[in-house]
Length: 481
Image (cartoon, rainbow, N blue to C red; front, side, top):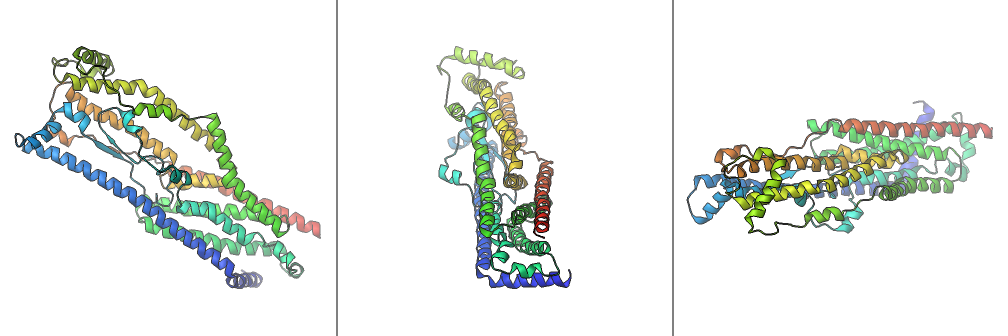
């Protein structure tokens, strides 16, 4: 850095520290960032407490079932517990298994879809669709408003700070009458503008990175193997996003218009990229791929056999069910022992089979909406970065849909375990409790790779704006000469 650049930076620093309004804006932004970190951690901690509570309930439930084998033949209360533990006619609909998608350490920084989708389910051998679509109560106003997490601060507030600090870098000099003094210096006005822009890039992007680093350190161990890559990608995303907005501001400045034009143009870009484009895409995708959740709500209505005392009807339901699960037929006592529990198990499975097309059509529509919208993320880097933050924190739509898809396979494991004993009239033994179904959520190995691809696209976008701005400013300066 030569002496002229040092002089410009030193002047800009003195001007910056003397501007109380700019310092106040940075302090307020820092305060918003700290609150966003606190808010996000509070929300995710509440989810972790809920997860710990339901996990403890499940462990207590099954520990009582295990203990009942040692107390077999004891008091009536313990005998009832043993019946539920050992008799599949009770166990298939009483034993509950919690399928949980645990939050990533950095989920608090970008809550994403975790407030809209359920993050745990208690599944039994009963109807899968009834259990999936029986929604918890939630405040719709809160869901519509969203969450004030760190990703919100970076996506929505930092562009406004960049606009406030940089819109008058060139025009203010002309309006204050100092532009002729700068033009007679040995360094070009173009380079002076770039140095001043770089100064504020370091200040504002440095603040964004500093707040993010605090959030990463508070939310988890940054050195943990599962966190290190995610932390680096998060910081890179912040850097790329700020670069985009500085590139956009430089392009606006390069037209060498007055401060009002720069401010209105920059604010208009903010409104366009963060409000108008997402809203228009949402309207278009709703019209193109409408969703009717009422069809799923209908699946949560309880249904049963027409006549619960009609054994012939029960046998007919079982006969209709067995072609779907041929491995369960063959027992000599199939149509005699525990007839009604078998009929109900068959009936709930048949209902799931009948309703599967409705569920598949709904899920296909959701995937079409997501795929169609993704094609237009290039229209708004802000939307792309929001998706990148959510994907990094594993709170994106694809992760939550993957979780729901995994539930179907897990429910199949539960029904396999209990139906194989119910329909073959075999008791559940103490040793069987060592082979209970366990839910596992597969890892998405390509998750961060897709985020890096998105960031590369936004970076190209930012550099294109910057290069166009350079050419535009150079052309304008040569035109004046």
